Length: 441
Image (cartoon, rainbow, N blue to C red; front, side):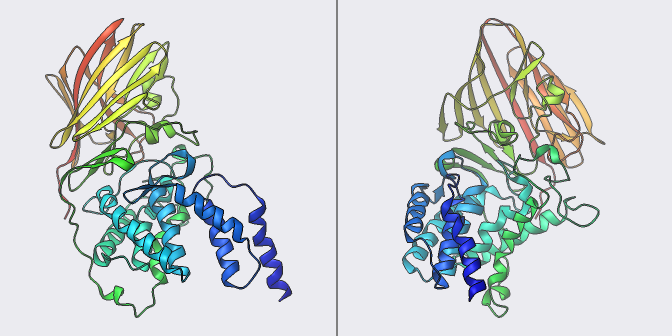
């Protein structure tokens, strides 16, 4: 008993510390709940106040924000919903369980659009080195008794299998820091060698007994309907293409950077199949690798969008007002088409400079580059990425990004439109397309 009390006393010290106002409050909830369940001393006051804070993070329609950060990313799924459902599984609080499951069912309808028909998921936001934690929500949803067990089994299985086909292990078969290959360049400042093992949250389904009916269920085939889905609470418009899913966002608002947040939240578009690039520096566009961004080169420094001054989500796109530099303001309207999107930029500048409006990165090795009138198209196997000048003065080109910038390809090219910006107003309309020719079943 003395040993147990010693461990309990150590665990209770979590109540003596101020935690970041985010999903970490669930850590303290779970510790105090465990102590309570085991009949040990715990803080009922802290448990109540922590639940009040978590409840304040719920913004409706099945969505949570990650505390005071206002972020709407994978932390909604593999943190806020995950811990909420885990708590409901580990306790006999039926009222909470009912509420958690109800919210999870609503969230699942939106979250399904973050996955392709082959299991790959949207490459967006922070902590992407957790990799197949992308499907952790589906795993704990199954354990908690979610209604769509066969569908969830499909999302979980396809996502994990898609990751097993990628270069995510080192030569000792240890999960590496990186995304589709080992790459410390893309990491956050809180990542460590063990960070990728947060992916094991997706194995929560192993909490089920070996004789559970779930194990005999067949995965239900992917059933998301292609097209556009507006997710207001996530500040996101999804274009689902079947074998890819692309999210259009207005940019982060009021976030403190923990590592490449501009690249992870501020680009115009994020894809599952064409992952974004992170910057090595702002010294030039090759080092900056500004895929899916409008980048301005001023005095040998690259400036890009870092949040929007204001924005509006429409039925088929996003309008945003933003300022990459004190001398420049940009009104950007994105209009989604069948398998591409149009960007309409109205740029008001007090200075002369050069800008690059760029599309999705694509692998450089073995690629084919074709320049046709006002369009540049890069093909690499089944992958195609193109940039088209629709209206205005500009030059089709490509950016050879620095190695290990793209989260998928170690060496990549970015199709781009090079634009000379004069003083006053410059209007430019461009179109970008990134598709896979082969549709995975």
